[in-house]
Length: 197
Image (cartoon, rainbow, N blue to C red; front, top):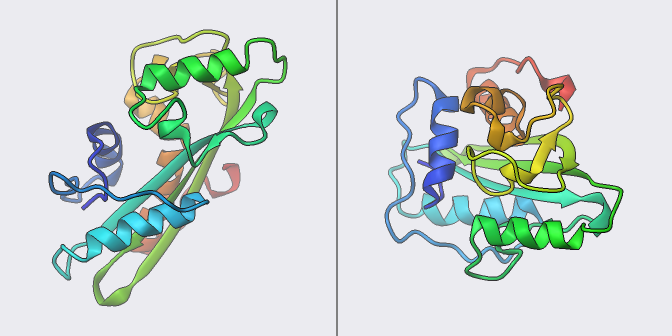
C-alpha cells in the first residue's frame, strides 16, 4: 500500500512494482509533512499508514523534491507546495520559471526517498535521483508536477519528462530508480542502474 492520496503518484509507481498488488492509501489519508528532509517526510507518511494496515502489508512511502542549483536547492522538500498550500502543478511550474527568468544556470536534480515498512518490523530505504535542467517554458502534457519544465540530462532528444512515454520516464526517473532499488532489496538482487544514479 502506497502512503499517498496522490493518484498521479499511484499511477506512476504501480507499473514499476510489476507482479505486486498495489493500492493507494485509504481516502482521507493525509500527513503533515513537517520534516526538513525527504527521508523525514517519507518516514512520517510510512509510519502513519503502518498504524492502519494489516501486518502482512508492505507500506511504501515516497517523498520527492526538485532541487535547483541556482535557487540554493529550492524548492526541495517544499516542491509540492512551492507556490502555496493549495498550489496546482501549473502554479508551481509558473513560480519556478518566474524565479529563473533571468538565470543562466538552470541545472536541477529530482530526488526521491522511499521508506518501506514490512512485516515483523522490517524497514527498507531506497533513493534515486535524476539530474537535468529547467527549460525556459513548459513542454509536453504527460506526467505531473514539474515534468513539463524538467529536461533530464540522459535524454539525448532534449525532451522534458512530460514529453516522454511513461515507460521511458520510468527508466531514467528518480522515482523509477528508487523503486528498482527497493524491489532489488525485496528480492535480494542488485538493480542494473545502481552506478548510474
